Length: 376
Image (cartoon, rainbow, N blue to C red; front, side, top):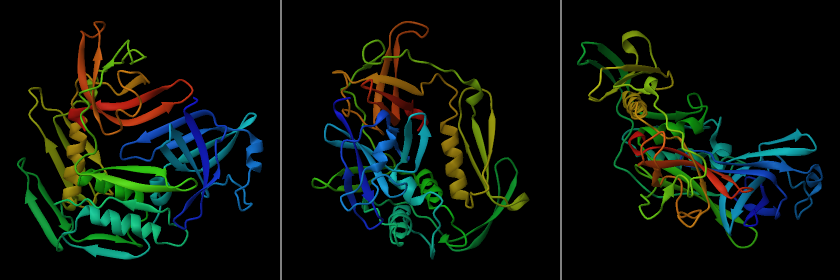
């Protein structure tokens, strides 16, 4: 635990993140670093810590005014806005979800925006992140990667009707891409929908800016963020400390996915994805009335189909900080090769992608949430 430190910062929505209390005594800390997700810092503090003041005399711990940052050997691993302080026996538990969640979750678009043939990443920069931060008290100082794509969303309004290869008739209305106060009440969901549809990955990084400030930058990757780490070794019984739990979830298998979106009857938005598997045909139906375009429905169907391989899988790996693969020689988004000796499974290995890292500072190990590379 000696290499981990926890700090409290003040955020007033003016674009600055200023140190309030350094080296918080955080008990049972948990640090979550997510790919295309919120991340989180949590733990427990003694009630007397609430008496701590900022350099200007205000309470140092207050929901939606305090940021909690987890630092490992000088690197800010995760940072979150304090959301909850709850009595937990003789202590107080605190939960601080990541900045993107605090900025966008359940946040409405306060204007109106309509576009044809627009890059989704320009929408992210200007109409989601910048728009949310431009509101009074909403500026967290987040800068955004200038990455662009050749993907375009929004089109001239038109009625679409067609007959599928199975003889089913589908009709819906296509039109411009719209964000507006009367239609968009959760910019966080819109952001994640665009990430799945485009697709792109995102990862918020915070770092020291001088001795008392943090800066925040949203990294983007199209279609993904990360690298294949062929130079590292992850072996059960060496640096993998808990026996791997292989799963064979046959009920997860599907060869075809149908997504049903907004509308009713023949005018319902409909998306499909299918593949040849060498097995019998098995379908899955997903209903999501928030999907209002054929493109978004097709993207949702393709994403669901990737998760429906029905093959041996791993979803969690516990790894020690070890010379085979020291902390931060790999990161979320990276692909790593997991190996195991002979046992319930014959000796072998599997390439997986890291989706989340949950650090356990008290035990100097990390729990990786992973998925086969074919599924993501």
